[in-house]
Image 1: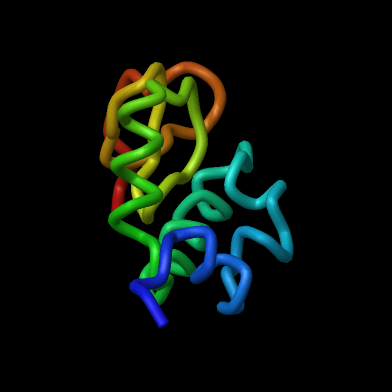
Image 2: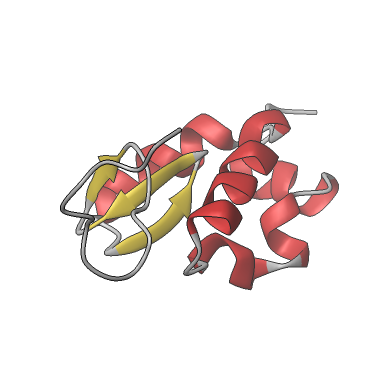
Amino acid sequence: MGAKTIMDLIDEAEIPCRTDPDLWFAESPEDVEFAKALCGGCPIQQACLARALEREEPWGVWGGELIMRGTVVPRKRPRGRPRKTPVAA
């Protein structure tokens, strides 16, 4: 039998994004970080990220990275304005 394609892997594996796709487009920073962590063991993680960057996906978690406006960003900021003064730890 020949080499498996990405679609073969998707059909055979338990891909987390196939069971709860809304999580990969979450609003809260905590949910976004959770989705990124779930991508860690995915067999198509690198291919997923590469294809998302090729397509210039507008937003969402793809291949374990958060994409906004077609580029990878380190984390999602919470809604609202940033604080003017630092929060005491």
